[in-house]
Length: 620
Image 1 (cartoon, helix red, strand yellow):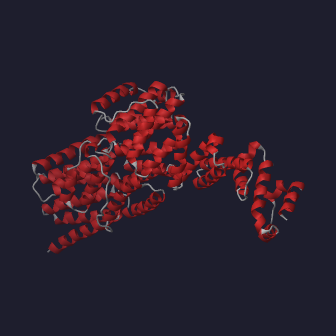
Image 2 (image 1 turned 30 degrees about the vertical axis):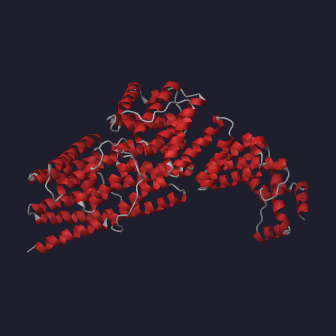
């Protein structure tokens, strides 16, 4: 029967119309299909697929590739030549699926493609084998099939004839190792590849060397306009493009495992770009160099902000949407967050999260997601909304096996839940990190320790973290600033005497926040007023304190930081209580309660209710 149907298809040009038959009733379709014996249906589908392939012009094959391959794959193919040809078709389908961000389909087709090749395919079909394994490794990694991804990439590294043929596999495997929290092996592998490419990589670099490199780059950058950037020659050397790719990768990984080297790698990216021309990785190198300008090594945030903004434009020049998630992470997560409103940075980080997921860059997408939640948290977004966002992103992280990102999100999730009032401190274990390197893990651990204990009223515990916060964070300046701010406030709230060490911490907080306020009044002006108000209150300057408290409340309201508005009202109320102005204190506590209710912090609402109850109990 199947043979008869096939003959009918060819003799009556049925094939050209089969896809367009206007069946009005599904039963008619089912009846027609039922004429084919069940044990013949797979071969019938396969025959239809081959007929579709032979009847489709080469220029149109891409439009029909999924339909053709899906039909052919139903059958059992024995002939070696047909198996190879079908493998090539599956590879085409896998490549198209990857370009369409359909990673599950790309994994399926590439897996089918490699299984159709002969046992000695690395000898008989070297280029095809390498191409299929590369797509398979990429698709399997993105789709969560980690073991198969590693196996496919290791096949390329084992059978590759040259370093050039292995570079793409190395790049993917390094990304995979890092995503699995095997950060040291990822870093070491990247360094080894760079050495094979002829680079000399030091094990460590003195800060003076970094300063010298940055100074040289600054002399080239100063005065360059956006137009100048867009007209710098394009890098045309494949070797230097590969070099840039791996310097970019090791720069990213060093952020987690060897932070002091990050700025050196960033400077190398920029140096190579100015010497050999710009490519898409130049944009990321310049963004990371801009991060160095805003760090402790070079304190020139405005220049970092200016140069970083021009680097984003480079991605448009090189049409590099695949690097947008990383670019947004660098710029809006670190550089712009020092100057632009937290809310607008959060919006762009959310965009980076969405773009990353759409193109399969899940690791960087999810890091954008964590920074998005962090900026929303700093903006005073409702905590219950943030908790739901954390839960959603945690499901994605677990589905895509991202243990590094999971640590950051777990810390945020815990802090948010505790402030809502629905969690106790967990036994979250931060990865071991060389204290001398003061990396991102250390910064995050201190940040969350300070935030949790400050908002829950554990003043001494908050100060414990704040006083032990290193002052040499290279890339976590925003976290450091906020640790100093909340530590400074805690100095005034402590039941212990304001000793010399804590007086210095309080003074440092005011100095740091004033410096930050010069660059971003939106983010920091209310914090400055609040610190000054607490300083005036602690030194008996009642009237000046009241003026500063009012300014802090107004600034927080203007910036839409409802949590800080509530905090300013709370501290102002406590100031009034100390001076016997219970009526004013009651009014301020009621304002604080409204703010904390909007914020969604049940812990703070209950605390304020108790304060109001105490005042009412003392009323005559």
